[in-house]
Amino acid sequence: IGPKVTIVNGERHDFGAMERNAHGKHFYIVRNDGDAPLTLECGQPSCGVCIKVFAAAKPTLAPGERTEVHIEWDVKTGDAKFEQSGPLNTNDPLKPSVHLSLTGQVIDNVRVDRPDVHFHDLSPSESTTASVNVYAFKEGDFKIESSDFTNPRVGRFLGANVTPLTDSELA
Image 1: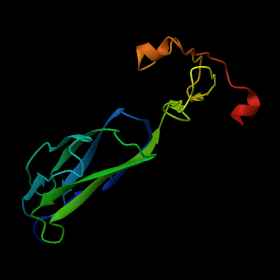
Image 2: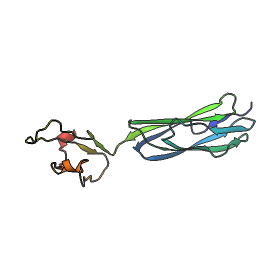
Image 3: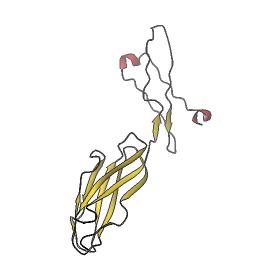
Image 4: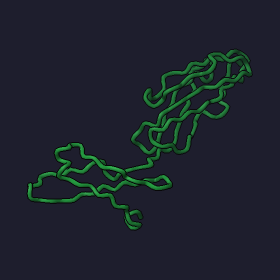
């Protein structure tokens, strides 16, 4: 029958949920279920920034032999879902390339409802207020220790107060 590639633990790995910018790793188990040597070569992953390691432990497997394909990734996406992949190229005549993929949900432990506040067209005699809600999703105490203004000259005219959200604001 020739070489025959089998991904023992599946071609698709769902890591569940990870924090944004977190680092993960997984090992795909590859077995040669054929009667001839199987060659393995990891191709170009879908994202060179997210996928840090994509390598087979052994380039050739004898019949019945197993190895691991090691993949490491950083959850670098602005989306709530992460999905990346890489081809494992083989000499299996029925499966010359196996699409190994990663998928999962991305969670933010801290999120703001808007990233910045702008005050436009104010005269020197006017005053105004604005707010930014900061949501923390981890257990335990959450504390904002300081606030900064990107322009220090303007910052001396502004103030920042931290007030916990009420139960109705969180609902």
